[in-house]
Image 1 (tube, rainbow, N blue to C red):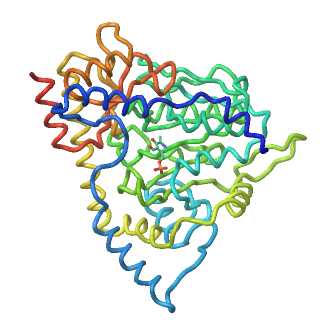
Image 2 (cartoon, rainbow, N blue to C red):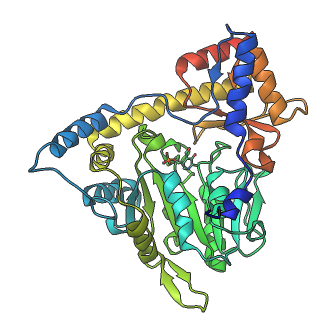
Image 3 (cartoon, rainbow, N blue to C red):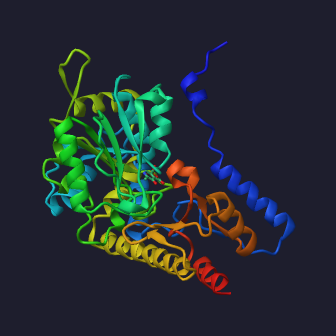
Length: 399
Ligand code: PLP
């Protein structure tokens, strides 16, 4: 019989979303007429931009014709997408990133979890708390012991931005704009973390899945806006929350040339080469038609449609924020990210407040404790909620 991966068995089960659906079912059994407002899960609710749909149709037709059919694509992704992304996402904003430093993936959850393959077991890894659970779980599944992982508290005192660590780390995960807190690091905070990474030789894994939501002028959309960051940072980007690709799957990982890791005996290794090697071994690419749809995001029509999509989600996020603020709860985030992070009132736990909102109003959030110990005392609401649900939320909270 096969032996199971013990590291996998040792990570705690995630009961969060099964707990949420079980509690909703229980309440509906007792009160079948209660309108449930599902504002917990961070999936998008609006359709794809028409420019992306047109590109999908066109590319599908190409696949139906022997003259234009494509099989396996280039391992790093098609050049048309890498060139468009380098130009529009980076060079247009003054970031020195070339197309051959970009890898196209099939979702940044996969990219982030897969990147752990590149790391040796003796690294000291810093992970903020609260946090998108994929970082910690993928590190633990890869066999890193809990002793090698340092959870770094992020609190309301710093608007949930990570303070500069007071210890040396080999690898540091960062997520800005942040899931779950909905806050984003300003230039000064991010610059201090880049300076820390340069001083200590720390590799930063920067998750920018929500960069499209940034609107404050002093919040960078890419870590490469900080001078010197390309010597210490990998960046992950996703089309999921930018252009509604959660069901299509397309992402970018940026590994600058010259970014180095070390062998155990102290030799330098080029991380770009290592990531290419990993991808060519375990990944066969994002579908051609999906890469064409992603390319359409950068056409004039695509840009206008994506901007309208993001504006729509910004509006629902702002309304959710205002609705909870009107109850007197301290609220965080929701300006540069599509999540609102609400302080639980009256000494309740995250779970108790979740239950209270569900029982009383049918509102479903995500208890902050599900994102780490420092998430206790908060609840997260998703700005991807449907406008009609937000209208109902405003009505019930006013009543
Ligand atoms: N990073 C963060 C912070 C996220 O919240 C998510 C999805 O919710 C992802 C990455 C993964 O996005 P995808 O795999 O859809 O590209």
